[in-house]
Length: 212
Image (tube, rainbow, N blue to C red; front, side, top):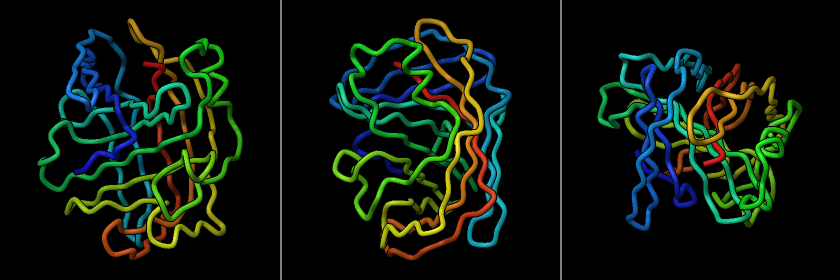
């Protein structure tokens, strides 16, 4: 499972105790001891006519993660993924929202309001670079064979696609600030290697976005 280049910090959550690490891809690593409840984090969707779902539990090897890309203008990503990418028959999903401006001076209240409920657009494709293509959401999904499908590859066409923030609330954590966000979406996913398209319907996601 490959990591997008704009995701420069990753925070991993699992069990009732959060064992989180901040990975800065220049090679530095920072350790944290945050705690959060992982019982409510999940995704589900129908993709290419097949149903997929995954819930984070204390024992199933899945984690709810959060990452940032950029410096002062940033993208913010939440994901549901296996702690070990080689976990058999595993799938994963990440959802990125951009662009959040003036991040270095941002208050918790401003970060919270960035995820206010409402309807949004997808970042225009076909290049995974919201800094070039403007504000919006990007969804990336990894199938059981490790293939990556995104809303911004292939033709990037998202005609009739929708994405909506249903709710946002503060998540319990120590040392950093997180919000738990529920989204619903319908979109087209494109294979990053072949450009093949799969329709995603009935998408629902509850994950963590972190001011980290």
